[in-house]
Length: 209
Image (cartoon, rainbow, N blue to C red):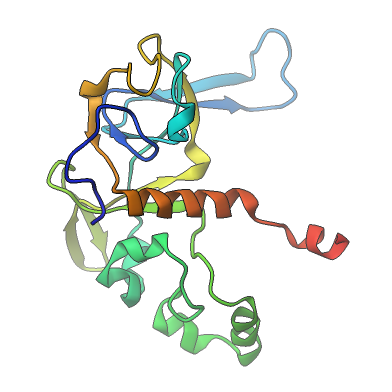
C-alpha cells in the first residue's frame, strides 16, 4: 500500500499538503552586492507540496517542502517503469534502469561498466507518488498518444524552507491542509532514496580515498 488508509493527526515526512507557496532564489551574476540588483525570487503556488523534514524535526515555525510535480514523459519509454512508475523509487538492475532499445544499442564496454556498478537507483533525485483519487489527472503527450495520469513526482533538488507561525510542532500545525500520508513502508522507501541522494560519493573523492 503506497498511502496510509487514514491520515494521522500530525505532519509526517512525505505528507502531501495543499496551500503552501514554493520559492526559488535566482542569482544572475554572483557574487551579490549589497543592493541585490542581480537577484530575484520565483514564487508560485503549486497544487500540492510534500513535507521533507523528518517527522521529529517538524516545528519551530518552519518546515521544509518540495512541490509535487507532473511526471516526465520519458518514463514511458522504459517498459519496466511504464508498468508501474513507482518502481523508480526502488533499486533496479542495470537493464531495468534504461529502455530495452537503449540497452540493446549499448556497446559491450558500456554494458560491462554498468554491470560492474551493479543494482542502483535510477534518477536518484526523483521519487514517484502513486496515483490517487485526491490527485487530479493531467495529460502527457507521448509520441502520438495522449496519456491521462495522476502519478506525480518530487525532485529533491527543489526542497526549500518555509516559515509559518502556525507550525509549532508536528501535532500543532494546520492539519486541515494535509491531503495524503504515506504508508510506513513507502515513507521508508522515500527515506532510503533521500539518504542515497545525499550520500552519493563523486568519483574524484573515491579516487582520493
